[in-house]
Image (cartoon, rainbow, N blue to C red):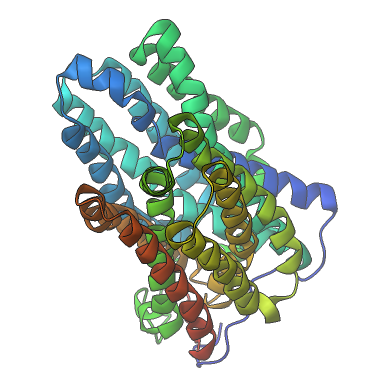
Length: 418
């Protein structure tokens, strides 16, 4: 491949593959992505049980989540290099195996520090999924179907978040938290078994798996030169801000809305579920809109713009308590519409031979944002600044709009194989 700089092109199949072939890849990748999001909520739904049995505070239990995301961030950036060198399939299988092992480790942990060690293991497993998933989708799915592939990928992630409490809490009530976590481990290994049975669908053609430079080759650029591409860093910061928005909605927005508008506790508890379900619906529509790459920035801006206006109305408007869950749903739908086009922004910024590395670095911004966001917004909640929480959410949603258009303005380059 030429080492001269040029406009990066999408690494898509030259011809449209049969629908069944593309659907198989999309389905398997989505199944793995569901387990990634499921693993992020292995512990949080079980905090009431863990607090009593481990004699730990909520701060200490929250630290287990911080450990998870810090490790996941570090691994996500590094795993992209492994994906580009070894191909995505072995990295994916390793990640799923580690997530399952961590779940069984949680179930057998005798004390808090054993749980912390398992959080490290779970973070390592979770850190591989985005570089793997997007490498497989970008390399194996036909270009006209990529928008739908990104849409389905986002939907399965939301389903993974929804599945964790739906599975773990009933098991914990019926059999205890250790059995619940053992069930989570069984699920992870069950998915690994399904993917192993269909492993041929997850193999890249030999020519598309970049290999180390052969003897006598003198590549002009190295493995880290993709970091000089401004669009990569614009995408990184875009996903950092996106993670802040998502973290606020998941952790603080329902309670802040409850305090502002007198929403009943049961109704406030529905807000996040409504948001996630409607977000998944928005992703379906967003998949069609992402079919035209030329308008992806406009779709992102429109989606987050509407979401920001809704957030502003919740934070500062005279909203009836019964209307709050519906507004959460509308905000989720608008954000979901933007999601497939958001992923397309990264694809357009990725040199075709550095897909894993780019997605590893870019999506590490998600973990960093989710690790840092509670420090700011948790302080606002502690000081009863509930309107401040919603104002901060609007500010970060607005930053997302500007970031999307900035990605388009920067020049991309093509790298030599690493």
